[in-house]
Length: 314
Image (cartoon, rainbow, N blue to C red):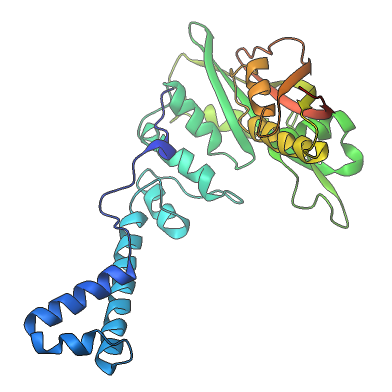
């Protein structure tokens, strides 16, 4: 599915940059043109007349800022909160419990598909994501004529004792930490399995008479996660602190991990590029030994990162 990248859109022309000094200078110039004899007075910042102009300039800034906010409120890339809720209502979409602006914005972006029964990949994806905010990604394809495969990457919250170490690592990699990760009753995210209720809820929603086209079978499945452990050695000249370089590289790799998506390969070239940074001369990537290809319904997840450093002279 081709979806507009909202981040890549240019800033809207209707939203102007605000500059207090420029507004004040315009007011002074306007007043001086009307009353040239006031020029000496306007040159003194301590004059009451100048203070009045500063008040007027600030009030104009407030008004212009309000106009900017009103313009952003009706544009999807910048709308937030209740303004975004009202944009979503155009497509008969409502914010789900626990759904943040970013996820709702993603649904609104493909919201016009809700105007018809499911059929395109985007429409199946939208209807699946509209079941719960815990459904983070959806992959759709036809494995044979007349049957649609809808694959879910969904999260399920469970107590710490009910989640294995491997499942916890995958959950953190794909969903981040649960809000109660360090609470009195620690909770963890894990990837939904076929037997979880959230999968049945999606299947029920997609099989509704006003959603599923006649003669089309729907098979709701869950994502196949490909765990990836990253092991690397950073080569750097003597002087820079190795621990600092390793921590900065770890942050970059985690940013790459956050971009994990269905059918998006994780390549060694990507990892090496993420590990490289200021102060790093070379990267020895020990694992993974090969690129990690992701096919239909598959998503790579970086579950472990171990970075060592080695100082070498030229």
